[in-house]
Length: 150
Image (tube, rainbow, N blue to C red; front, top):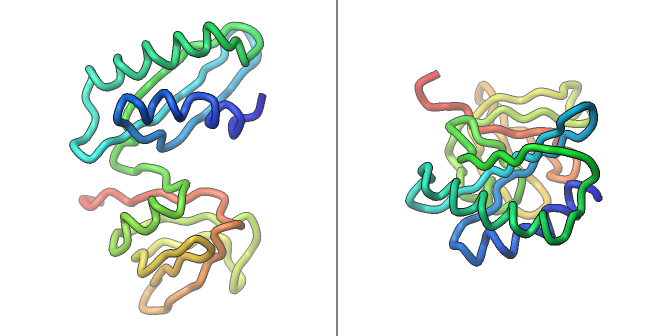
């Protein structure tokens, strides 16, 4: 099962509890794998929130048994340098500083760090040293917020 398929499996349960599935990391193999679930909500995430989601997702994974082998389930907040993975994330954090790495070079470079000027479903615009760069959403490898104090 791919990460995308696993996301589609667990996301409805997470949303029913009032949380957003921000990101999912799956690393299987060896003696022990790990499934990391990152959740958020407008009021932030605390330990009780993580525990509630962990219990629900764990029960679902036990019933559906979508992954081979042994793995640990971890649930946490996305943190200060959160990944931006959906168009809605980019729109929500317009005006924030971001680090973006592209799969392929755009304008001769793959890495951009600057202010997220705008975003829509297909394109984000990042201002780096006063120059705006248009980056296709489909070719973004990773994008993260830069914590304000750095």
